[in-house]
Every structure is written in C-alpha cells, then in structure tokens.
Image (tube, rainbow, N blue to C red; front, top):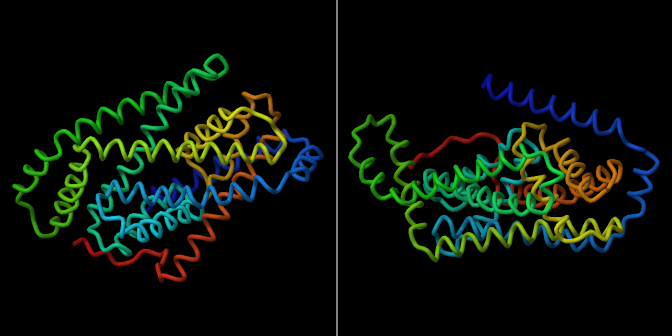
Length: 321
C-alpha cells in the first residue's frame, strides 16, 4: 500500500510540474482565440470514431481470449470500465480493473482474464514499436535518439519474449501441472495454467494475423481521429501528423502521472506538433480538446455500464476459480 501511495504522489507531482512548466509558456490570448475558432463538424465525427475504436478493441480482446463472439458484449463492458479506471485512477489502474470486470461479466477464470489482458497490451507494444520506427524514419533528424531507441529496445525485448513464451507454452503448461503446492497457492497455479492455455492459441498463424490486423486498424483509427481534430483547428497537416501525435501520447502514457494523464497529454502534443511547426500555445489548446473529447466518451460509457450493469469500482471479494 505504501508503494502504491508513493506512485500516486510521484505521478501527481510529475503532472503538476509539467503543467506549471507548459502553461507558463502560453500566450493566453492566442490560446482562447484558437479554441474559439474550432470547427465542430470534425469533433462530432471524431466522437463516433472513438466509440467505434473502443468496440474494435473489445473485438480484439475477445479474439485474443479465444472465445466466441457471443462474449463481445462482455468484453466491450470490461474495456469501457478499464478506460474509465484509467481516467479516474492513477498509475493505469484501469488495466487491472478491466481484468476483474471481464471476470465479473463473462465468468471466465481470472488467470485467463489476466493472460488475455496482458496479451492485449503486448499487441499494442509490438505495433507501437513498428509505428515508432516509421516516425523515426520521418523525423529522425529532429528527434532525441533516446526516445526512439528506448521504444525500439522495449519492442525488440517484448517481441523476443513473446515468441519464446508462445513457442514453449505447452511445455511450460505440462511442467506446471506436475507442481505439488499447498492449497493456499493453488489459485496461482490455476492462473498460470489458464494463462498458458490462452498463449497456445497464438501458435495458430491465422490467430496472430487477425490480432495484428486488428491492432494495425486500431492504431490507424486513433491517428485518424487525432488528425480530424487538427482539421477542426483549421490545420492542413499530412496524415502522418496524426500518427506522430498518437505515438507520442502512447509513449507518454507510460510515464507516471495524475489520473487521466494530466500534463502528459499536453507534453506529448507539444513535442509532436512542434515537429510540424505548431507553436506551444496552439499545441496545448489542441491537447486539451483531444483529451476532453476522448475522456468524455470513456467516462460516459464507463459510468453507464457501472450503473446499469451493477459493476462496482471498489475492490470486491475475489473468486480465484
């Protein structure tokens, strides 16, 4: 509990320092004039893209869990609650919350829920690495090499680890089944077995291709609606600008921050749009609109599900079976 409290404090302080630094550089007259000049049509269109993107993420998670599409409604509910958790709680607590949510809605074992959720995030890391490579190719001369190199190293390590884990999943499962452990730790053994069972589905090439195609579509959709927000501001930037912003935001989300990535969004947009000669004031205005739009969709969906379906965001007794 103490370590969690320190993470919250560090994240909040980091966000506060970022906000003070960023807002101290703004021209407030230009800031408000930029917001007043927004065209509403691309904003409305972007709302529908964000909603569809959440549904598509639920589809991918459903595929990764190797369950029939009749479970899609449960995966959509759990995905929406996970996003709500990331908005209202610090240190990406929504990632853990959605595991318990899918366990609650779909009645699948926690081990399988955990493994599928981790694989869901791994798919994002792999695609992030590929998009970061493309961004380095486009802006390599203007970027700090440390940013690109760090993501590429994580990408390579994750890819090698996943290839090895998938290849030896069946062997590991057989070894774990022979373990003789106390009843107290039996739940942990079940988690591992369910997790490795989920991993074995990736030994089928068509399964991997489906997940990667869905992940590619999701990244392009995120870049597209972020690009649409640029049109709302009257900026005629290439589509690659949307890709650049989305990559910076995903990388920034890994940093400690206050709930809702406050400060991180602003820094990510400032750095990304700076590559296209958008000044700090207009970049921060863009980041606020981007953040408010996506969070409005996530919060409304998440709250609706928690109220209508009776899911509680507070810790509940856990059934490990």
